[in-house]
Image (cartoon, rainbow, N blue to C red; front, side, top):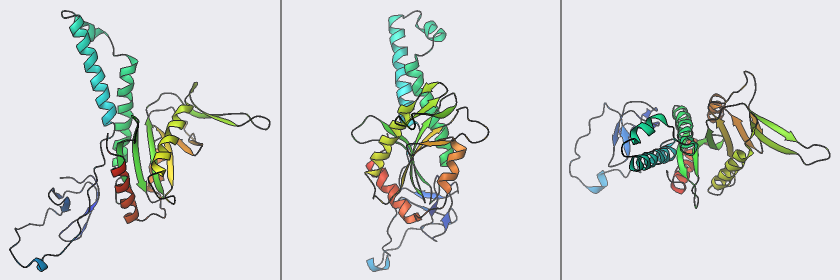
Length: 272
């Protein structure tokens, strides 16, 4: 198989980079170089067999999976209703009518998550570990993407919105300062509130010393040629090409610490 993440050959200990050809051994959840032949071990004293710890393989999940399922479910339910109500004309009605906005919004969301997820997966390594589409405890909401990096954990909410994101600040010297996230002329401040809730959940699962960063990543917004990205209430608003260097920046967390944090989050926040 072609590896989705970097690994280590269990036979020779060689580093295997992401997307390298390797053999995945399902029984032990380990990988080995394709050049190694594996023979059946001969019977011998138990002490001759080295006691080697097998690293746990974490399933990163599939970007946009839950949104895609919900869109397909709603679309199929509408088609079934129309065909049942209009047995003869159902096909024609479906051909000349569109799905309601409440259904297409799920498709839009899935496309945004899938597109960003593909870009994030290309960065995957021992120091950039990813989780996609994770369920939040005691909630119907989910976290689109989590990236565990040397500078901390990034909680990433993908948005496929049209228009130019910008920050509107009201108030000042004599009135309380209020920051509003605008997309064109629409007030989308609630998006920031949503990311902050996700950040709080992730922080509650980790040691206080681990930095957790909130991100709103707009995949198709109308950003200016120069500048454009901004931060509001500690949430970064930007686009994929601005996000990727942040994930690859050097920081205090080691590869072993990153792997441990990744396993902790994967267990606490299962894939949707």
